Image (cartoon, rainbow, N blue to C red; front, side):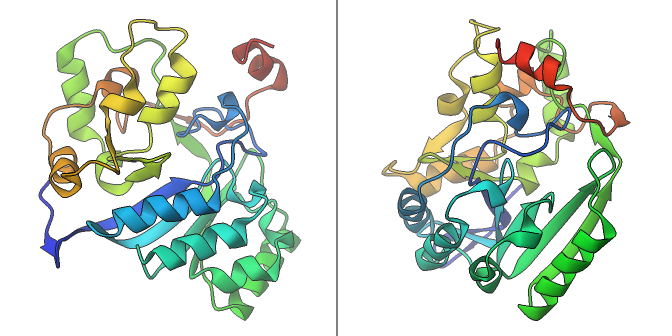
Length: 268
């Protein structure tokens, strides 16, 4: 993959940030591993500072607020204001399961351009809730995309990939490195997986490198543009790829993780 520059900024399809790590659902094979992460919410001012720095070298077509469940953030309107003020992007989008979106303040809808609503077969929205969200999006001129999802692809392997050939194949087939660029806690990542895989699986695999550091670029790097281009255009796998199936995993029916199993996974 090769990227074009315009006025000294890398042109990309999208950039996202996890405004919270926790969620009100417990989806099995959740890509950002929310069911296994401690609750955390981004500080709007900190995110704004990161994006202001990043906006000097990056121009995504759309900026996505994801999670976790973004509507769990205590000041989502403030986050949207910080993103808008940074100048990173003109199109602001939120990706949500919708269970909390119907009751969100008007101030959130007023600041959005787009909403992607994931309707999961294992935790479906009622018709009334969907109608309410649709009506609010129409009233505030928010473009609504509804995705009905009845299967998840396994993305976390049962054990680290054993051979370098397997790792290279996963990386070659993966679309996350093109569509899911992430800014998180002062670093830019070419996909959403490194910081959270390290948090969740690190205690199990002590040989694991510090994925959040080795697979990300610090936003205060003096040669940020060059480092980001190097990361985006690299042909070799990330260290995280050994602990990830990317787009190569089998598809399974969508399901929620039982609370007892979740507690065991968290060591509770």
